[in-house]
Image (cartoon, rainbow, N blue to C red; front, side, top):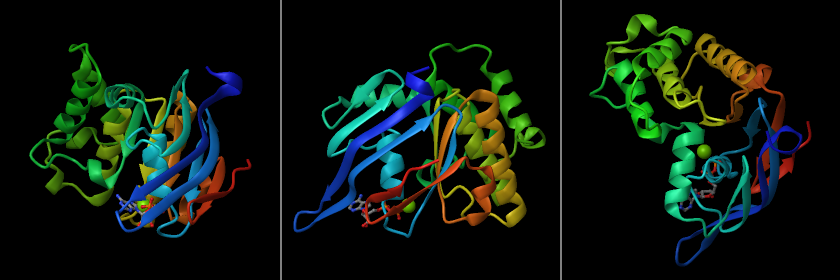
Amino acid sequence: MSNNGVIVKLEEISKHYDLGEVVVKALRKSNLQMKEGEVALLMGPSGAGKTTLLSVMGLLLRPTTGKIHFADNTYDSKTRQKILTDTRRKSIGFIFQAFNLVKSLTVIQNVEIMYKIGKLEKTGYKEKCKEILEMLKMGHRLDHLPKNLSGGERQRVAIARALINDPDLIMADEPTGNLDSENGRNIGEYFKQIAKERGTTILIATHDDRLKFCADRIIRMEDGNILNHDH
Ligand SMILES: Nc1ncnc2c1ncn2[C@@H]1O[C@H](COP(=O)(O)OP(=O)(O)O)[C@@H](O)[C@H]1O
Ligand SMILES: [Mg+2]
């Protein structure tokens, strides 16, 4: 554990998208820290910078300026791609639309493939994939293809994929976007359970007020700024 249980800290992070004629300032000198086992919601209007913040914190995108302190390392605009990729694969799980399920693979294969990407050892993983899917109440759907699943079931497979490598950090972008309230609530319950049992730190960008029950705090963003980061 790092200082005072803080696992990740953004220090004066900005992210600019250079579009040639204009530069979009998606993050403006943001500071934020999260503790082990903490669940936070990231809320704010569309275009506020939520997805960008998750991407920079999750080491998918380099910041334009500032530093990301994660576990015992520091990353910035100059960190080599390979280091970012390796850290991500080992320690960070994503529930993003862009990382959706592989259509041609079954439920369990979708989870196995994430394991193979992340870890070096090649034995014992089938059991582990099954275990995680069972925890998420997907044990009866292991050999189904994504097209034969409901929206809530697909989202549970996405969560299993994010969990399989025991990440320290999970970044979830609008995870309940297409779900009815019961499924949305269940996803929130899983996040709570995962954070409590595994000490995973979870940041969830969402418009969904119904997820408030699962969060230790709410972080609000507007126009590239974090408005509050109190507990
Ligand atoms: N790849 C990109 N290239 C250029 N501009 C982008 C890109 N991604 C996001 N933006 C812009 O950055 C701002 C923040 O976007 P985003 O992080 O997606 O916000 P949110 O997730 O809160 O809707 C918006 O103005 C958006 O148009
Ligand atoms: Mg977004």
